[in-house]
Image 1 (cartoon, rainbow, N blue to C red):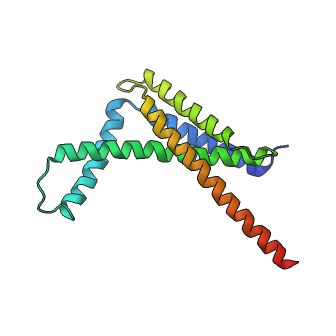
Image 2 (cartoon, one colour):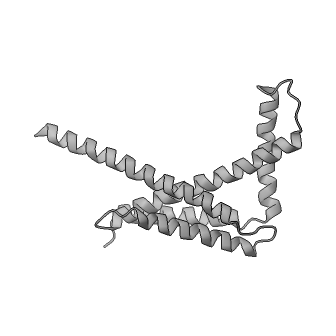
Image 3 (spheres, helix red, strand yellow):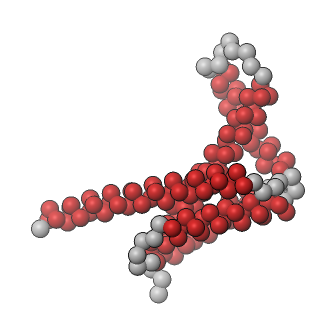
Amino acid sequence: MMKLKSKIYGIATLYWMLFIYGFSAESGSVSGGKSMKLAAFFERIFKNTIGRGLSYNTGDVVFTISHIMRKCAHMAGFFILAVLVFLLIESIAEKRKLLSPIAFSVLFAASDEFHQMFVPGRGPSINDVGIDSCGVVLGVMFTALILKRARKKVVKLYQKEW
């Protein structure tokens, strides 16, 4: 029977995958509009604080901020997916395997980009798969490091008691 922890990680992973696909299913105009609104908000903050007195093309700055935000969102979304998949696999498998969560998450990134071929105003991007993959590798490395350190602390605490 599957452990409760495994079920929780499995459900969280599935929900996160649906969350990613949900954003990918938005049309290009809807997705782009949301990004541009948020980028314009950040541009106004910049203009009213450290950007006072600077002369620049607002449209260019908003577009650049929007582009950077979208790429950071790709990386962050797949970082989180990789963490969840790593924890799920570790809760099920006898041995921890680093390549399994990486392979699964990168394949999901590729399928997400393929899915965008069928969304109006969107299209697949190999660059986005690359950015997603960077988030995946960072997520797996981060999780492996945190778990390794946590386990060392548990071992030290256990040894002190004896």
